[in-house]
Image (cartoon, rainbow, N blue to C red; front, top):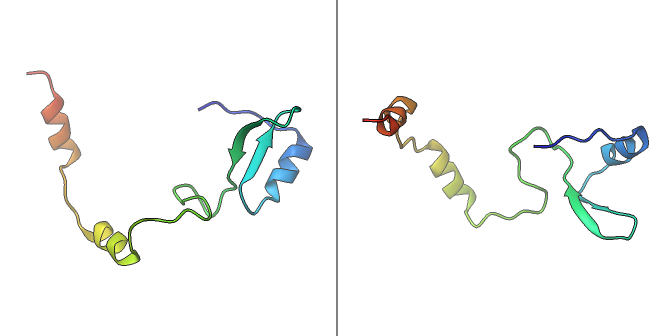
Length: 79
């Protein structure tokens, strides 16, 4: 990921954002969208709707399946 340091005025304005903000160049062309942090990383952008029900999400969170890291690493070792 590339990191840009903002000037203090832009930083102040984006810091007040409560919803996604379109970032545009001087010609008005959208160059990106800024999503303000909401309590940490890993949260979906505001307004994003899941196709899964809350019950299905909880069921998947509580189901512990898969392989351990050791099992995965052993399966990709050269033989």
